[in-house]
Image (cartoon, rainbow, N blue to C red; front, side, top):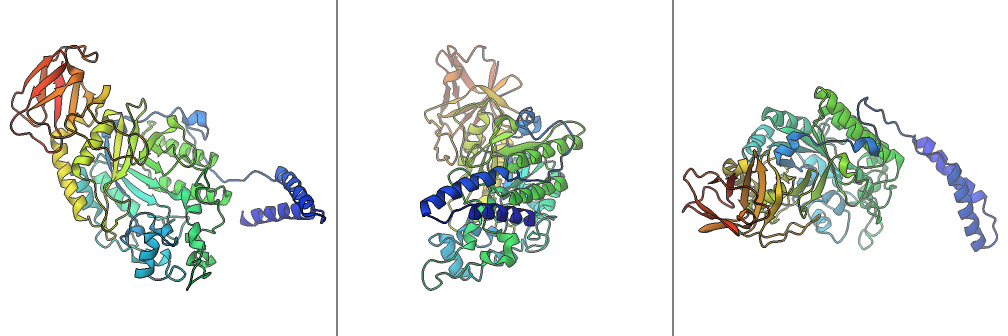
Length: 528
């Protein structure tokens, strides 16, 4: 393929050059444009090797739009993600493998100080330092399950182009180097032991252009012009060639290079074929046109075959930045943000308790913030996928460890109002208006902000804070347009004693007990 494409490039270049009359520069430019147009017209479309799995789904928009989200995902509501890999080693946060080659970033300064100049000590030298020596997936999964997670997602490959499984197509992988362990496989076994659905995330699509700075050099003394190690052809399997489309050129951060697109298909198809996940996350839209659609069709068809003819697969993709967003083809993902109201189709927020990879000094989300975010998301027909940050060695920092214990206590009391629920007539009420969209998660709620869910004919009202003395729910007042049935009982989850309540014309008024059964928020079950 490489030789064929090189020849094609040379034929086009030759066509342009030899069509140029050597007269004036202006005339030469016009001739070159015309010649290029003629040459491009005769160039063949990219040739891909995309073997398809027989089944219901085809690699077309129309076929993929027939997707239906499985009930397990709609019922699960809360998942935990290990967004983890070699980039945790420097303890300097997300995008380290790229930003260490970008002067002026804190990662570049950190790398220079701790590891040396990137012309010598590059990301390739970080990878062997990732030993994962304290990684105990069974012990971690026990904590995740107690905290209420119903599905678990392993990083498959981040933008750093390092595969965390026994990859057939990438020698730079966790079995060959670093921890010398099949990280994805170990996570899967641990998740299955606990009865959790298992998923993988792929961020490879952006990698081909994302790594371009590794092929650069300092533009200042004393290393001015000295190429970074990414420019060494010896390491092209890690850093790519540096010839892909510019990173985020205003339209996409996905490469237009057919060879890179083929590489993406080979590796992600290998990932889902080997590990048979029920959940696949792409960090963007569906990549690369027919290439990505072929992968998605294979994912669905393979999953159907593995589950006796029933589709249990979930594919996450986003409507930002790159690739193709087909709302009905999977589950829409909103990164570090929420939706404004109830979405007719199931969706998901993905966020992190801290930075995406471990970072010293990073401010973590508190348990109340996560609980309130979860209730808001679930009330709007969504799920929350939360990255719980790990040290490079595979152990938990103290803040995430504390969160898991606190979340377990809250879920034990309030899980009934979360799991298996569906949106009510309205998602909620209260003074705080959540800001919707990606990268907007700074909302601070009050106990007067209430979110609704429903299950088995009952309505659950979840306060986004700890109320005092009484709770007033306007949407359940006797004259409220949403309250078309007479209330029979009101109970506080986790509290065995009867509650005092009355349905006034403008609100359901609940008198609270002296002691509340859980921290951060309270959940009321209203039956009719």
